[in-house]
Image 1 (spheres, rainbow, N blue to C red):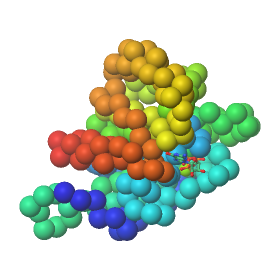
Image 2: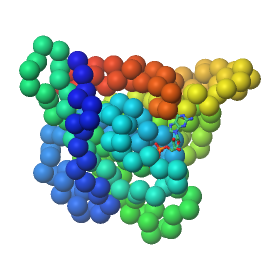
Image 3: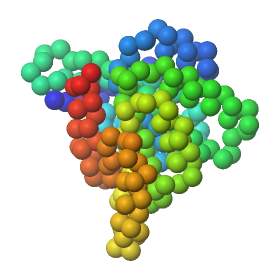
Length: 213
Ligand SMILES: Nc1nc2c(ncn2[C@@H]2O[C@H](COP(=O)(O)OP(=O)(O)OP(=O)(O)O)[C@@H](O)[C@H]2O)c(=O)[nH]1
Ligand SMILES: [Mg+2]
């Protein structure tokens, strides 16, 4: 069971609500995965770790790409000869303090359009920063996204940045609250897109979801 790395294809970046609605209307049965999370949390990095180097652009300037990026990826289930085709969505998230009100409104409409139309056939991978779990923007996003009843996995990324014992124990202490607050999500991972920790586990989780479709 493998994702055919290096064969993931960028299709388009969509920043207009009409265009997104049209695309979704033309792909009513789109299956796949969507990555969403605060700007700079490591969505593109995790996508690259899973789908092959330089699939998505990794930026050091947060919040530049305010569009839903659509990719196509291929996956060869065990025992099959022909790869299956799925969609991958890189959705640069919420928490851009610096954007204008107008841009913010358009963005909210894009998100509404997207989450309303993707069916139970798209798995949501919500990334958060392992150093700062349960931030306001993340909690607000979760309160919003819960209502769409999409299957959601939570990935706490950048665990490699927890270098000292005391940094790690801060996270340990928050564990009960993290699990309590996130009872509604299907899986919780602690990973590093950069160093590779638990990326294989995230891939396994994705596969389990796709196999069930
Ligand atoms: N140490 C460490 N750095 C990471 C990790 N994941 C991402 N980064 C770094 O964090 C920065 C942002 O990563 P991106 O993958 O561009 O983040 P993004 O969520 O796609 O950001 P936007 O596209 O702006 O929403 C880059 O400098 C990455 O190298 C990680 O697991 N560990
Ligand atoms: Mg990105």
